[in-house]
Amino acid sequence: MSGCLFTVVAPSGAGKSSLVAALLERDRSIELSVSYTTRPPRPGEVDGREYHFVTREKFESLVAEDEFLEHAEVYGNLYGTSKKWIESKRAKDADVLLEIDWQGARAVKKLFPDMIYLYILPPSIDELERRLIKRGKDSAEVIQRRLSEAREDLKHVHKADYVIINQDFGVAVEDLVAITRACRLTAARQIAAHADLLK
Image (cartoon, rainbow, N blue to C red; front, side):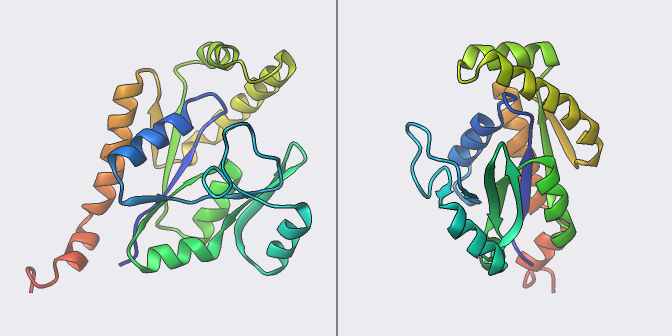
C-alpha cells in the first residue's frame, strides 16, 4: 500500500499556503511536493523550498525527459510537478501533498486515481477581494484578474473529494488535519499496516 497523495487547490488569496504550512507544522510525516518554475524567486523565497527555480531551457529539457506529472504555463511562466519524486516517495509509504491548480489536479487524478482532492474556498468573493487587497502584493488590475479566475475555479469545486471553507483559520486547519488523518485510517490501509494482527 503506497502513501496517501493529497492535492490542495484554491483560488489565489483563499489561504491555501497558510493552511498547508499549518498542516505540515502539525504533521511532519506529510511531505510537500516542491514544483519547478521558470519564474524568478520573490523576496524571501528559497530554491528547493518554495519552488525549484530553473531556466526555461532547463524546464523544457525536463519536459522532454518526462519528468513532470503535469505542467502548465501561467502568466508567461512555466510550472511543473515532478512525477518521479512523487512515485519514489509513495513507494516508500510516505504521504505527499501537492499545491496545484484545478487543471493540474485533474491531470494528477488520471495518473493517481486514489488521490485525495481538497478544495479550499473563501467564505465569499467579497471576502476574497478584501484579503487580496489587504495582503498588498498585487495591483488593482491583477486583483480583478484573480477574482475572475476565482469565479472560474468555483465551476470545478464539484470534482473535489472535500471542500473546506476558510472562514475561521483555526477551524479550517482542524478540518484539513482531520481529512489527512482519515486517509490513513481507511480499512485497506489499516489492514495492510497491521497484517499480523488481522491474520
